[in-house]
Length: 472
Length: 81
Image 1 (cartoon, chains in turn purple, brown):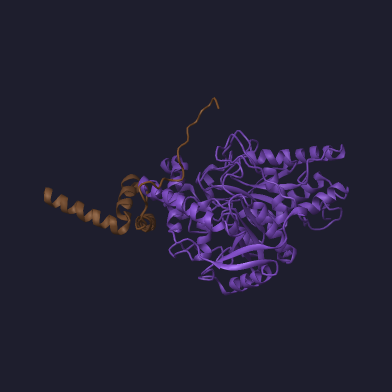
Image 2 (tube, one colour):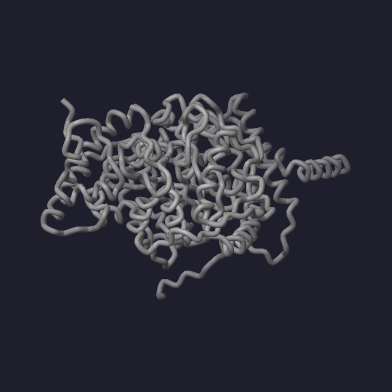
């Protein structure tokens, strides 16, 4: 007999958006405990089958759910995330469970505090139910093989022969498979938006400095960002509102608050730019979906071609991640624990990163100022730049990443945006080869997440791609 | 001998300028970690050094002015503030 699915009726656990669940909770149609139990059951079966789970935080979840239940019954309402289950990419520290960073040699690592993001979601009344799988060290060791996490390769809910994208593998899979309404991922260079696109969910990369990184694994101090992965742009705003803001424990956080009110949000009149050469190297189906998205965007926005600055951004991002990653993981490189990593390439590449001349790193960081200035000037004229999120749909899990090819425009936008610390949001926009999802990437100016979310909501109000549910 | 060493150094410098320092990077990594690696891994290391060298060469071809500072500028920390 199927257990109660938390929504008041037996059957499969299929959570709706955060807003849907919050309404059901307040109507008394379900409870935080029912939601937590149903999520844990779904994660322990389907989630594990997708290699999306590192640790189920059942005891903590049931304790938090009971507290949320008591508070809501007493009329204490912490807001839309109160009683909502969520999952953390396993690079966020939690003092009562291991934090593995996706790496076999750290499978028993204990950290004696909670990350700021975890604390803030606790304060919002959200219920942490799982630590989610990720590529070892968030890909910082340069993996070529897609089986680069000790829990097994991230399997795409749309086709288990295909990869989820990385490095936020479990976060993307769990949300896409409707096992969780939202999860937190992280992005140094593509690790939120790419898996979001491959798995057909909404992924928000915030402006650098918007969200505290305290208690999150450091790969690249100057590039790392945390952000929500969810079903809709509106949900990403709810999560961002809970976790954004200054934190004295992360000196890079800005003294800025994030607020988004859907009722007051602009729904038309956006000005968008499409980088010239956007289709270079893009798979035909992904290009087709992008053209259809642009056609739709033109119904409520002006769209014009733009030229990206001509700067060697791909080279800069490679050198910065290599140098900062080698420093962040110096102890693991030096003491030989690299040999215990899952991906054969991860056992070797960081030895080259560790001897990179400081001059090469500094040159990249000097160029970066130019990138940030040029992008700031460009973004002053646009609400967003629009591109496909990825060149193609998800690859087979047995494939290898080919880093030898140069990055075409649709790939380089990620380098420009991450080097400049700009926000981006990836939205499902159709299906390509093998019935796998594709993504539409909106890249905004610094601190313009509210504008991006308004634009993304306007798009999602006119489409159903974000409602598509994977088989099984 | 000194002449040969000078010639070798000049050759090395030329190689470095062409390959972005990939050979030097590979040699440094081998000197420090080579004993941990099997032949297949050495091949991966060489390819990685080449990739980093290519990236470095690309950046070196881009001129930066003397006053263009890195983005991670130092800031004084004042605990009393």
